[in-house]
Amino acid sequence: MELAEARDLAALAERAHAERHLRGAGSADELAARSADIAAALDLLARDDPAAAAVLAGSLSRCWQEWGRVEEGLELTIGLLARVGEAGQSGDPRWSRAHLVVGELSFRRGDQEAALAATRFAALGAAALDDRALLAEAETNLARIAFRDGDAPRIFRHARRVQALADGDARLMTKATHMLGWASYTAGDLATAMERFEENAERYGDLGDDLGAAMEWANLGDLALEAGDHQAAARYLAAAFATPGLADDGYLAPSLVRSAGVLLGALGHDERSLELLAAADAAYRAAGLEPDPGDDAAEEVERGVRERLAEREAEIATRGAAMGRGESFAAARAALSGLAGPAGG
Image 1: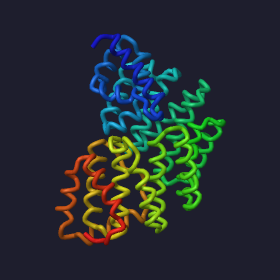
Image 2 (image 1 turned 90 degrees about the vertical axis):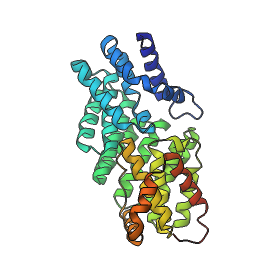
Image 3 (image 1 turned 180 degrees about the horizontal axis):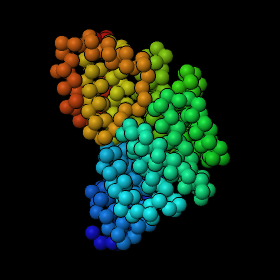
Image 4 (image 1 turned 30 degrees about the vertical axis):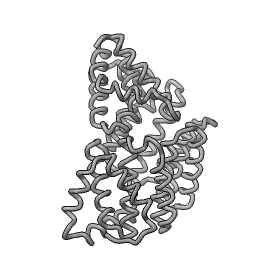
């Protein structure tokens, strides 16, 4: 690889990061097609153009998640920071963003300690430079970390900081509203949490961010199921499944398949439920992801499904785990569309 090619890849990654929420933007697809070159580009840029290396590494957090390559992204980013030494510890916002990538990917891996350390470092750098957008992203990840810890006051604190930093910016407000929803949920206020997610789904739609809206529809489906409203849960999840491109998302697709599996289990469709739950778990493992925090009701549903299928559990789970991401997504979507039919294995 030539230096010019590596720099071009860094510029493409930066553009894809900036356009990641825009409906129909082609930069993400172009970057995905060139993703096999990222490791070589980082290696070359670390030696000859560290600033461009920081841009490339700092632009890829969402991509690594969507591609289902979280472990690879984490390894490459940590390796780059180790290689550049003191330069990576500077207050340059490009390096602060690279540290935030480590924080976000560590969170997705379930490593709370590493996520907290890297995200705090990024937040300090962003605050020192008055980089409001980067600081808002760091505060959002700190809120996520608090969510996994089940600490409602901490989630509220970080989410309200994001809200203040947004200062009317609709894109940043989606982050604040999303985490305020989870803060309310963690505090036991399910109704307010659902109001937040409804509000955010509409805002994402106005911004042309279909995947963001789908994320909130999925959250609403999970919360409706927890509230015992199976009809609403099916409606919300169906809206999420209808989102173009979602089946290719290595982070959101397994989460949605798992939600469908839980709903099907709650309705007595045990065999398909277990297949989808096993498929989602396999997809999480393959992507290096730790499932997002769940609720006790979902865990109880899964336990019940496994107990009822005890004699065939291993067989069915093995079949589900062998499903590919596309197959499990299609199966979940089809099962949801048939929920009006009779329940059963």
